[in-house]
Amino acid sequence: MRGWRISCLLAAGLGLAPAAVAQPRERAPRAAAPAAPRNMPEGSIPLTLPETVFLAIRSNRAIRSQYLQRVSDRFALRVTEARFDPQYNIATSVNRARIGGVTTTATLVNPNATILLPTGAQFTFGWQGSQNNIRNQNPRAIGQATFQVIQPLLAGAGIDYNMAPTRIARLQEIGSQLQLKALVIDQVSQAILGYRALLQAQEQLRISDEALRRARELASVNVALAAAGRIAQVELIQAETSIAQQELTLVGAQNAHQQARLALLTFLAVNQSQRIWAVERPAADSARVALPRALEAATNTQPDYLRSILAIEVSRINLDVARNQRLWDLSFVAGSAAGGAQTADIARTLEQLSSARNDFNIGLRLNIPLGQIAREQPEVQATVALRQAEIAREGARDRLRQQVEDTVRNIDALRRQAELAKRARELAGMQLETELVKLQVGRSSNFQVVSFQGSLQAAESAELQAVIAYANALTQLDQVLGTTLDTWQISLND
Image (cartoon, rainbow, N blue to C red; front, side, top):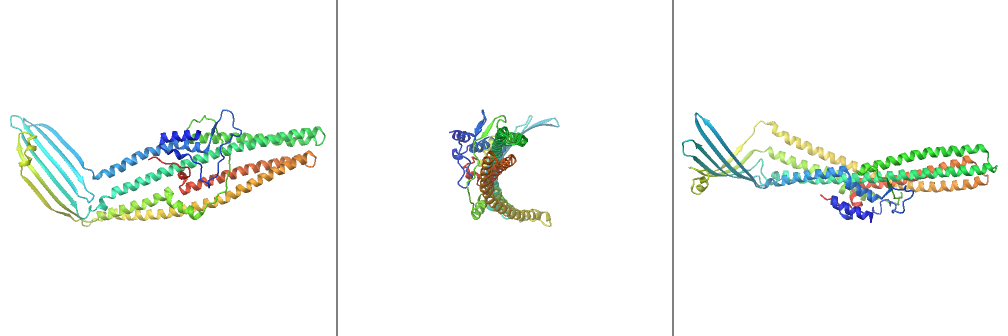
């Protein structure tokens, strides 16, 4: 129920799907089903791995900042897509002047509308009215309505050229979404690693505490054996030395635990004074990852690689635009005007437009630039940028393949190491139990028991490190493939 409440809170706060709380897929390491917390200090707050992920999504400052950036990015796309909407403008001015003792008041009103079509044609509709008021003279007003169309035929012509800004903006919008996805993946992965670092510190604290308990129990046994005359008093020094060493190790483990706790709280952007306790148990289920499927998934979902592909598409569009701009400027021009009659009032000029004289013009406009080498520069730059984007994509593809292969191979090695570490810990425990029995019957020495206790402690630490490393490798594989959000069933609300 606790996880469901957190998921509902996230759905309300960030618009994430309530299904965002899901256990990892079968290939992911099975973090312990939250059983009764072991050795949890009184007053501590139990924390599971899914809750850590949700807190990271809800409170993480980097994610919140990126969502704010998305507001700006989406508005930029909206502005670009509105370039073919009618543009309206009203210009007006009033000027009062005294020249040669004559006071004149001039009023100008000029509303107009402009429409750009995807073919490059630009239509302009406008009306201009002006009125002059001179002292001791009758006012004079002139009004004129105009219409003009300009259709480029070479440079600036065509749907591909005029839709280029919109296409680039849409590609950049996709890139912005991929950037958000990459950031969320990175932050979720860091939250998981931070949680496991806390879990490892807690388990290391438990291992150190149990090692200290065993050392003290051995010291008690030695005291009893010395009192019975079965061992020399001098052998008690070995047990006391072991206790001192374990106490020293325990202090270091306690400090490491507090560091891991504070680091996780800081990353989650929650109250740093909270006494949280990771209630999962480190475990590593056997998982095998097929390299071909992993490579296919990476090329289809890895955000950084997909952004390198988008960069190529943007560069191609920019190259087409640059080539278009090297063409001659040939345009079809047509227009008409009605009005020009003088009246006493600027408002009455509108009434006379229907009976005013109509003029029109139609023709071609040609501009041929000669000897301007600077006109070639945009095309050269766009060509170089396209080639660089293709090279960057090739590098990104090779790096991605390397990361996938290294991670998959690392998972196989770490899985085997975890299995061997578990076996080594079991054998070390059996050796210690056997040696304790032998000590009780006088067939072993205190030095050997202390040595086997150290071996068991080292084996427990090695197993813990191997299990955590294996679980982290699976998390890293999700991050490399770009499937972290799918694994945790997290939906981004854009």
